[in-house]
Image (cartoon, rainbow, N blue to C red; front, side):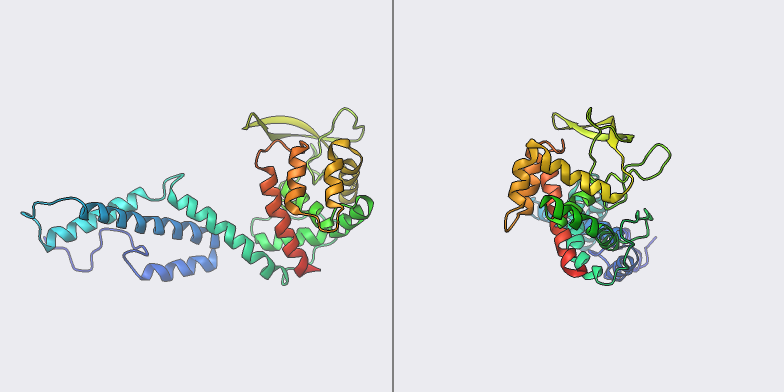
Length: 295
């Protein structure tokens, strides 16, 4: 039985069907993250097809059974194999998607910030999944920049650096530490309740890095009556603790560096995550860009 000429043995992709590009554009308008993952998967499929084609061309053939029909069948088989091999966890598509997501987040935030609504100062942010990342970032900055500026006057630490660290520790307000009854602990900096802390505490399960390996542990964290108290306690801790003296002196200079601040905190033992400084530096730079638009 002959197959109709329009029959396709492989799903439409950017590599074998131009209409897939229109579908991808539609998805991008509705769900940018899903579009990034799909585009990365399809680019991986194109790469795999070209790789297999190059391998076949480099392989010697007898030519006895080769004709246009077998060539077309081979190409269709290669397309099927390439599609089956793509999208695997840890594959090339994952690498491409992560890179595109970082670039999109970095370029979209300042542009969207100007149109974002203003949040009430000091008010807790909702954790709705339908809030765009750039809007959440802008809301977080607007909600806490006044408290951060008060803490800056107290400590000399740049307000943007403190807002950025609060954003990093709390996931821009999405993963704030909660009390046992579900109420906000107002602890935006992940400051633990050590032996010298006599105030209220919130006990949660958190991630600590031991020997470079992530482990889940139960720990007690400080709880506050307001976000302003959280900023004040953070600034006081950094300013008065000998272990952070070098960090505070460094950022109190004329041109403080986000990277130096983040690396100084990591060296002083603020967090156990070995990549903490790199992550915090990126958030500080994002906050500085947003600050230029919002203020």
